[in-house]
Length: 518
Ligand code: AHR
Image (cartoon, rainbow, N blue to C red; front, side, top):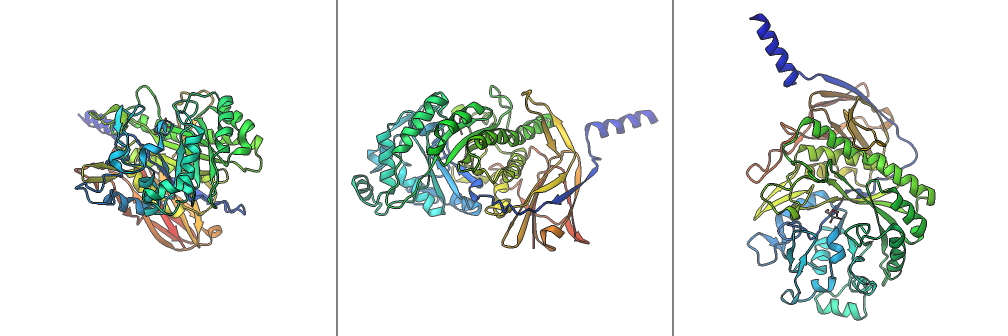
């Protein structure tokens, strides 16, 4: 009888780790003189004509019953304002290389329709076009990032689009004015093609570098507008693409892009909400591997460009799961759990480390597609756990990076690549300083254990906790949905104090915390 009870208790401890331990982790700030600033554009977004990202996600049109301002959803405007979005990439993705901008200007009833061949064969009515995009950016103070059509567009078409948007006078400006916009818009970022090794034209790197050189020649600066030209870069581990582009075209670009998705199996990407602890840790390992991937690409860039004149632009990243059951497979609509929030936090902690070369990232995508900020359904909206990470991390935008020595245990996770070893730290953290305020963000990745973090503050020259926030679900698979929109939400964080110049805080299992110190 006694043994029976003993076995039961053992089983509970093994299978239900309710008695997790508390791990102690020391973090030593290592401020240096480099004064490396985390570009605000690291917190950029991406909106593609894909599924319900634009239509229903951002744009409902002025005649909609859904409350809107000039056609843009009011709830979305309000949510996006909080994120202080620095830059928005549009109109794709793969869609960009099939997009013909002239179809998206002028009276809406005259705009031709097209089939969105990349994304579910949906009919695109072009009601959201150049004016709608640039006005949206203006409304929210966002820097537009235009993806130009190289795959199926001509040099002339591309050149005229830039003229239409940015010239004060001339034939294209005249048409713009007839369409209701007198002043040119400001346009800085232009991407010359997207995934040119794949949906953007299936070029070899040698072919594309020549095509890039040609197209970029005609991407002109009009009337004081200055373009920042970004070449279509590699995916993940395609280091040869970076090598050839840098060798052949580095003098013609300001940025070179990179795409990296935290996908574990492209044939069956798994459920967004139903996953095992093993898959959770595996996903974090895959997300963190972007550190090594960036390092490899940066080494190649350094070889050709030691002065770091060409920036790295990670213009697509994030998680990619199977679509929600019953939704169009081509619309990439997925739920978003605390696991996605953890991926976002670990990714930003990693991006900050590369602030000297990495100058922009654009998560895929802003609404209703992949790892999105918001999900909408008719007139309803939910803010995702990933949204809350972006919100918590706003104070890092434009901050000076402070390196940290994080003395954390590591968890080894499997990798399908022999050349990369994946390890997930129990604690991941990052620190920046802006206007005398030090912002520290921490993630406890462990599903079982709490963590006590100790940080000596002397070198940071701060001694008071100003505010703190925590994001945590009851379970790692928790998410917000239309019938439970607040299940995962930011809460004030109270478990921190400063004693004898040491900041001490206790991080619950699978939680993310941001503290601001003065
Ligand atoms: O973000 C979804 C798609 O992923 C983009 O259109 C494409 O560039 C990438 O393959």
